[in-house]
Length: 556
Image (cartoon, rainbow, N blue to C red; front, side):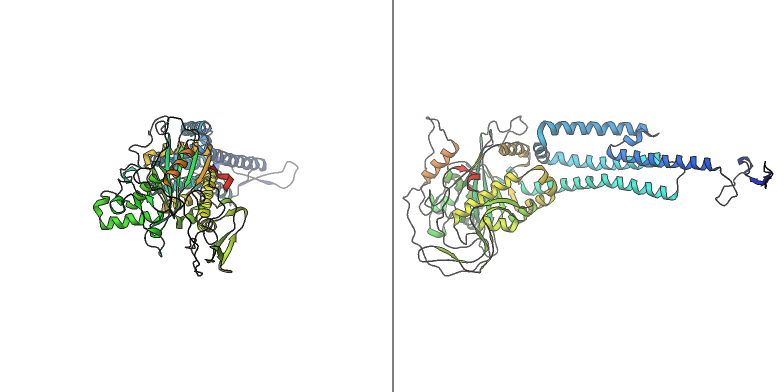
């Protein structure tokens, strides 16, 4: 260390050694007696801070657009291709979204499990590449001289940016996995549709510009099954047929009473060998017992249902097709015990309640056939007016007969179906899809082949833009004890063809038809019976009910 005299005669001051005087291999430490000019130190600190800020900015830019941050570094040859690929992919996706809309785009993607699997691989690879580019941007852009705090801060920020990419990527992969699992479980395929008159030999024309061009109307049987522990076999307590005009998307819902008697049996059904052309044995032979009767018959005579994996489902479809005079093309079955989970997964359902419905409760009938609730047996009420129902409340609303009858319950079930259809939207699906898919996969089956799903996605969009009407068969227009099936078929035909052509004949009964004059059952008196199930065996009464074809919203 050398000393120079002060120019003003003051005390000598220290002079730093020149850098050249540093010996080879000797490092400078903070403890070295080295002087750095304050101006130069401030300039170096400012440069470091500027470099750190630039690293933050480029890292954030690379998080928004893959490769964008690398373009401003020496790694631009990597950043440019990444950015072009990202922008090209985004442009294609945006074009498809604008052209088809969010709802149709979501349906199209959901209807193609194979495409979703490819998309899942691309999503996983793309996410890893994107995260890697963010890390590379931070490493390349950071200045060489950084304090410990600056280094920790930039590392934490980079990790946060990577998390912002990894989280939605993982969520997307979870959604795809949940969806594909549900598709594999729900859609059993055409192989599970046994050949019979109620099933088409071919479905929609997959791959065509209009897959439904040669399929003007498709009829879907909606079954709510109840296989509770206290019940013997499966009871189809909810039966509706959705008849859809594939051109307009207009839908008519036909409600089939569970207690319908003397239902016609087609000659091609194995049930015909046992019961003849009519399922007629009094109160033990109701419409909702067809499924169990077919299963029992299959156990006794396996050869009668040879090659049929679902005798109960097949027989039910055949009988309902004969009742309505219309082919039933597809069947969708929901376990009503799982209905609660499905509604909860969708965040509930909005219903305009038009009759007070008890939750739980016991009932009895008086000598005049009036139904009375045992006071205090209920756990609560679903009140009149617009209500947001959770899964449990929706189940009770759909199934309770404690203070009403089957026909009132049928109306409420149609209202719930309509509300759920109207409630479906891309935002709901996006927010709750894993739970919805899990609930659906556990409790819903449909004999729709997976290759037909793109065509169904297009049809669902048409249904969203069409009208939904309802025609129930109630005690006001149908005698459930001795039904006139010719009249039922006539009403169905007129509902589907409001302006029939003169040269078109209305379907009439075949040899399986039964025709009779309405009769009235004498009311009975029963002692109170206790149950905590949504369905009860309380005697049925006739309540005011819309028995004509009407917009679904007018009866809900």
